[in-house]
Image 1 (tube, one colour):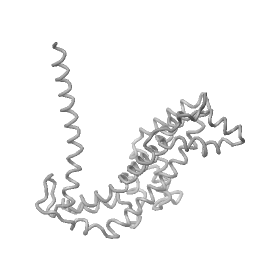
Image 2 (cartoon, helix red, strand yellow):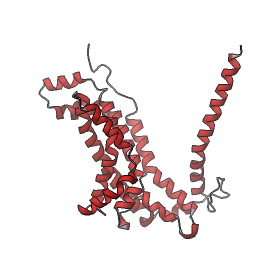
Image 3 (tube, helix red, strand yellow):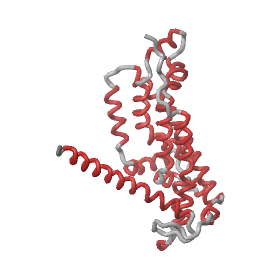
Image 4 (cartoon, one colour):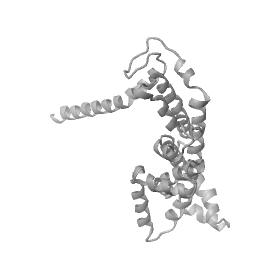
Length: 277
């Protein structure tokens, strides 16, 4: 009999903890949405006395929003495409061919994901200066891809393990090469895995401030993750309403990508019936 009240107490404690965690995430989001429509926005979370779109009118200009967003799409889109392509090519032999070096290599990759970006930026900056890649879009794309590649390979390999090898063997029997079987058999069947790697890589690049801030020098090439710093003025003056409006616009591409991928590839692996007994 005593176990029932104890279980109820534990459930209420767990629910209270989850509510606290939810509030910790929802309050900043509420501030962004409410302050974007508030003509007198400040650091307080409050319902605006009057709603206005003046904050959006102030930021929706080529210099403030459109050019930085286009730069972000170019950098993150190029980096994501390069990351996914290289991760697929690297994960395929790790998934399909057994070797004593596979585990040490994967552990090395896992270790590489734990390296702080600030620890390697100084030698990377010096290297980019030597090879004339500093202040170039392609150089920043290369570094974006290289920084996300270790974890992308780890994810891609795990998803690729779920595709039955018998399907590839059937393709090899029909004369397909390993590269053709990767493109025509494995990758189409691991669509949700590709979606996860794509979204993860894009989101990590989209919110990266430090890398483009260090590698890009020309203001016209700066992405939105760096240009958002312009809303923090001198002597502690911050345009909170414009900052919140810019944050809403800045978050839109990531949300749209997630919704698009979730709707098109949200059903899991469609391998049922692919392999006949």
